[in-house]
Image 1 (cartoon, helix red, strand yellow):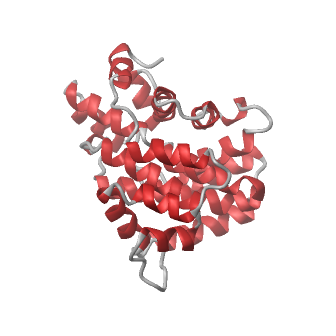
Image 2 (image 1 turned 90 degrees about the horizontal axis):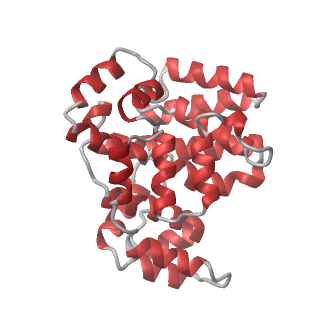
Length: 272
């Protein structure tokens, strides 16, 4: 159970950025168009700058430079841009020191992006019909670390937490020992606070124990868990992380050859 101090911290989080709420409202209309989506995003210069920087980075490897939001929406699609903007908006709102996890903000963003990329690529082998939905889930599943890190620093426990992490202890157990919950549980609580779709929060929370997810969502819970293990903040796409992901995939009865291919491709891209 999340400790009372962290519950208070989550309940005092600022409301969702206007960009996010306007996008959610716009997408409630089945006839939403590129111009509307681009117009909403363009109101937030920081998000626009971060979005264009991301899309023009080696991560996407696009042949043509993206210079406008409309161009980004036309190229990637409205839903893809919406998911990226939600993630960027929340990260900008919650900027904090992630040193308890022995990681900086730039690498943390890269971890989230690679978890999402892993989830999309691997879900194509597991269940292609769920590829689009898994993208945002994977982008948001680590957001709880921002609040946890902030709380550890406030309580002057960051150094001890980091020492146990670097000693190789199980990350979920360390989090439970210090704040009474895992990243997945805190991320889910944050999303419920912001009144995201309950299904999104549930799926992220179930990633800790995918077998407990109901039949319709178990595949997504497992893919989120594998993304979290393979692209861990501790050793993203390193040999130990890849091994853990393979063991879990075999346990879940998920495609192993596709997993090997996905891991090999992303490990090469991570190091590029």
